[in-house]
Amino acid sequence: MIKFKFTLVLFLAIFAAKAQNPLLNLKYEQNYTPTYSEVIKMYQLLDAKYENAKLVEKGLTDVGKPLHTFIINSENEFDPVKIKAQGKAVLLINNGIHPGEPAGIDASLQFADDILRDKNGLASLLKSCVIVIIPAYNIGGLLNRSAYNRSGQTTPYETGFRGNAANLDLNRDFVKCDSENAKSFTKIFQEWNPDIFLDTHTTNGSDHQYSVTLIAPQPNMFPPTQEKFLREKMIPDLFSEMKKGEYELIPYVSWMFRDPKRGIKMDQFSGRYSSGYASIFNSYGMMTENHVYKIYADRVKSCYQFINVLANFTSENADDIIESRKKGFEESMSTKEYAIDSEIDTTVFTEIEFKGYEVDANQISPVTGLKRFGYDRSKPYTNSINFYDVHNATEMVRIPEFYILPQAWKTVIERLVLSKVEFQRLQNDTILEVDIYYIEEFSNAKRPSNGHYFHNKVTTRSETQKINYYAGDLIIPVRQKRIKYLIEMLEPKAKDSFFRWNFFDNILDSREYFSSYGFEENALKYLDQHPEFKKEFQEKQKLDPEFAKNHRAQLAYIYYNTEWAEKTYKRYPVGKLF
Ligand SMILES: [Zn+2]
Image (cartoon, rainbow, N blue to C red; front, side, top):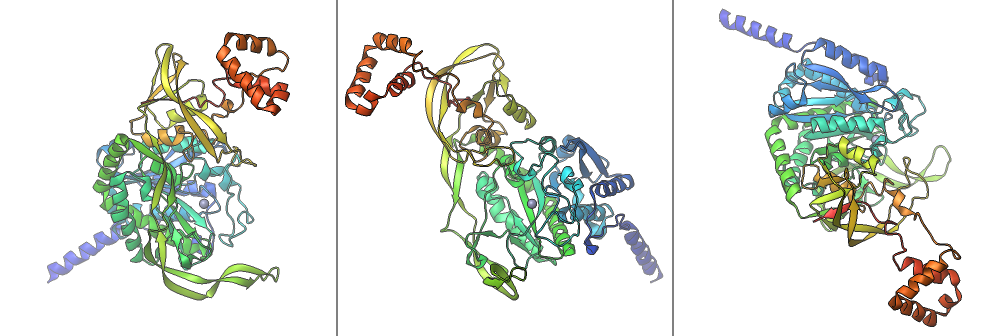
């Protein structure tokens, strides 16, 4: 009996000694979120205390300060290659992309502190998983701190600003990569090649009873094995595990109708966004959207609970996650066609439980005394609602074996290199017969968005042409691990292609032209040397009286319908070899 008691005491002493005291003094309960320098100091404290954690500087940001990663492993080893060789799954968490949405900054600090001190045995997660945290991504925005940055929220009392130091929205910059932040992020992402990626946000989109919502990876954006893994395992597990805790999870409330009671949908996020960017590399990328109308401490704690659930899922399913991505890459690389556009299927849905507030379209504003749309928090409800999460392809492209990219397009090449695309360069000047697009129609945005006049509408036609390429031009084999990236970025009609973001706008105006006077001698000579064309031209003069009266139109007809027309005008410069 005495011996048993002694063992029990010893056991309790060891157990008590194991979980250490928290190191950080976070103040989210007092509606305070740390400043940028406080965030970094806290990670430095954790780094100094724990052997198995390290704060690393990784490239610059637009404000001149370095981006950091905070790596938490089970041992004193922080090299991604060595860690991945051990078969560990990688979970990458990005915070503070929108500094007015800081719940993830606080939640990640709290989680790092807790896992390192092994609160509730959390550290056991690290046996099969490594956690990499970007403490604060939009450093310029965080430094631009004020009580007046986010008009739709009341707490925390002060936050940073949405734009970065170059006034870019970084959650539109992942593929176009204008900011130093995005360039540094690309290096981090490509170096770690995370299996799971989380980007933390806060939303004021609609009102309901949940503190945290999830923009999950949209399964149709993945090859079959990964789609199945998402639909059958990962997404259901995350929601059911969250249900066991204090804070339930609901899909991000993306409206199909003004009242969520009538159904909500799961959107596809393209490569400009964090989660879409991850999906391009077959990584399971997602965004939490905390709900702005909940008190700040609940936002932080619900985000923390999700990080905890996600880390547990990553750890418990590390082998299956890694295997599904391996198969996914193989499937992506061997497919013949690729969907560059899709739409939500309004005939397929599942029913989910939704805890909302009744919509009231006739609320009286306390500010203006006028009617406005709102939600009545005195009328909560729990309803079954339709959830639409299937997207069908609406446009496919045939996948070429090679893209040929002339070296002139340096800003594009810089981004391919950052994304670790493999390519060779032509050794000699060569004529290649390639499939080539002509841009037929394109629309220009009326106002710039994030420094670009995005081309919303793009139509193309294809031709086969013999084109001169020169030593140093890029031959890019498409069937490599970056296949989805290559298609999404180099097919001009893909949602966030380099073409749409103006990287190829030089081709959209002609370089030469004709003078109504100066072109005449050459035009006459051409007509004489090409009797067939001359006949066509004269027919048109006879049949089209308006044309017959218009000197300029007749010269234009000759210019645009003969070899005089510029071949490179609106010719998209990336050739394709099948
Ligand atoms: Zn956001």
